[in-house]
Length: 233
Ligand code: SF4
Image 1 (cartoon, rainbow, N blue to C red):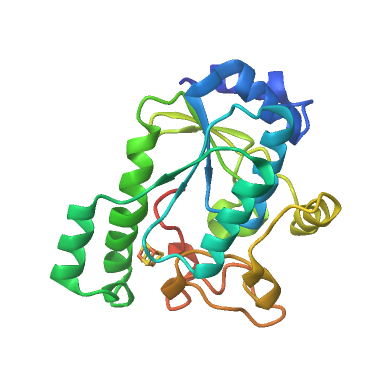
Image 2: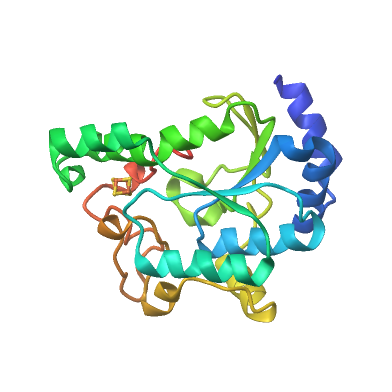
């Protein structure tokens, strides 16, 4: 997509609030747009918005095989609360068998490249399979979340995957997310109440101390500029 078309879409949606942008995407793309949820707090807000304004909009999540038990509990609670179908993607069994047989179960702590390889097999490949054939995908990313996300727009062209990326919560603050969750009784991961602001796979996530960056507990052995799993490069 060229820059002019992207500017046109941004101008067309500039006055819409987050729910309005979700609804616009559904009207525009139908089943060719899907929410990618990692079941984080922002994604839970997004799923709540979908349930209100676009209940037919597809939602999917990726079960990497290393998720915390609390995240599985949250997926169950979310299904029961909203009655939405959430598609669960898994990495290819052959890929995981080869990866673990070659490198061991926790090789990802050895280097950034090793960690990226694990994320590639367990997260990025299943995501790419699902994105193939879509016109747009939607995420709960926010600008404030990380150094790597500071330039995030509400509508972007995802060059790597060749489709639009829509981020309805791009300009939300962390307080807004939690105010929304509390006001609307949105189910959320119980680990958030135990010092985990950002949650991924169990072996790559830990609690953070008061005042630490929200992403400090993700891949804590790496520098902040490397902290993306490849889903959102
Ligand atoms: Fe592997 Fe950790 Fe990435 Fe999960 S977050 S896919 S366990 S490296």
